[in-house]
Length: 194
Image (cartoon, rainbow, N blue to C red; front, side, top):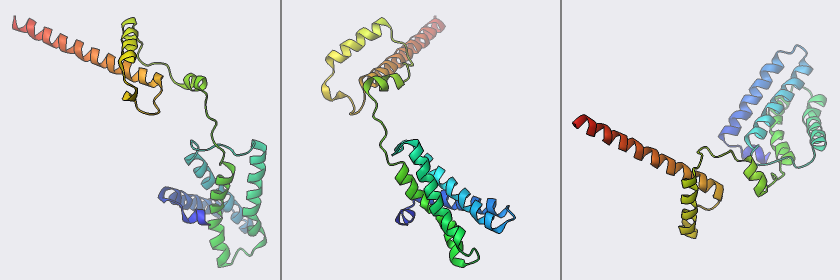
């Protein structure tokens, strides 16, 4: 419940939308009992999907996939259990019916609390895209001279040598293109004057 109270604006809006969609889908079902069950299942899964997608870059599964599925099934039993045994006409149940999706906050924290695998240097380099600018022999010689002259504190922390090389190469090619454009424009004005 404390996780529900700490929802930020975007997550709270997603919770309200998930509960609303669960209500809409549940109201389309004629059987009153199944209407309640389906609305809980839909709103719960929509909100859980939102939470997982919103934090997918930050965490990974904390247990193997079969155990994750089994734990999710157990959470669904906890979510649907009170709905099965209670009187659906009480006002307390109406509040419970729309707030049970908040259990998804707990489930997301439980099932997706694992740390993402740290990549080795070789894996990180393999995952990086190829250079967008092809270096020439002169570029590589200039890069070697640049590395020999640069001071240790000249780079930003966390920037790899490959990223620094890409940025340096891109800047060098942009500078070369600007110089060529200036030479052409000055050459055009000289021709126009004569």
